[in-house]
Length: 343
Length: 157
Image (tube, rainbow over all chains, first blue to last red; front, side):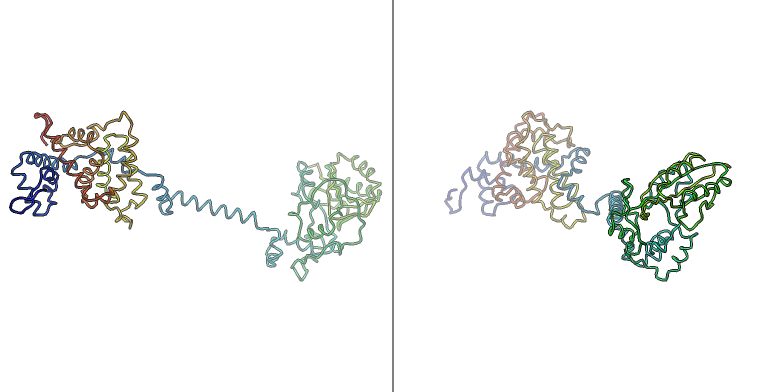
């Protein structure tokens, strides 16, 4: 820049050319603007450059009139990066309805399954006394029976018609699957009335061992039949913990013969001759349904003879089951079920 | 995010990089990054943060990334990818874009596609307002000279 004769600043060609853009877009102050205009009037090159800048500006402004094809714009506008996608998907409200409901369903199912698995339901009855009154008759009977001493509960032991003995196909499985060996029922035995009339229904986990009649420990039959704790009543569980090694055995026999009504008295006589004494409340050869029930104790020495007698009437299937009741030495307990094979 | 912002970003990379694949990727990343930072819904309270300066800064960042990785044999963006006015000659831009410094090209496109002020350009490009004006002046002069030098029977712009 140089000074003019009248004191105003005069532009050099370089500065004037550099200021042409600002002159066109209006960025110069009035004094500079006047100086540039003076210079342009006298400089041909500046005039050409000024025209080029104006053309360039018009062209650049028209760049905004261009456009991309709609498909390309659509493709670009739908862009999602991992960050934006994860940020958007991190909002629960943005998740698809089906996914949200599925997660809720899976969560509820998981919580239910965990509750069922982790809560010790078999012990829950101990802590909620009211449960004992509201339980089903069968479970209630187990709890009540467990509270009674063994001397009071001279239980009837027989097979239920559905428990497997009357079903020859399931006889073995039915007799060996139950850890107690048989089912104690109270509806037909006198003990049932004493059980149901007991004033205090709340089970007291009294150790059974202290109330059992004098029994002699007998080595259990070496038959590994672990008693599942889950199937035992609470009182049984306590008793088994106090005397874990003391276990008895019940012998189960099953037969199917013709003319049962005619032969049953003979069988009763024959087994009595071998020293058999009834072990339950009902008489030997008690009739139930289409079968006869024999629950007796017999000297161990006559076991082989007993089997010979029975086999004379037909094939006999025998199994030995672990049972809490321990018999005196030299005595065996038998539960014989004879089913009528005739129609 | 408004559609005209998407269009401006897409056009910025298409004209600036003149490579279809790179331009598409750069535009997508820019839009995705802006969505991640500020949200993309009109109801979003962050929508106001979609300032021109923020968009320009993100465009510059992606430009730098993709301009470096442009392949040697670029797939040049053909005219078929644009909707061009009949009296507009894209060849002028092609020549300019090929020869001009990328900072000048960037400033010219941002000024005219995003209608940014010089201050917004300076903030987005992280430079001074004077530098921006210098680049813009240089660019339009070069563009104007390029138009004058084209054959006389070519389209008049």
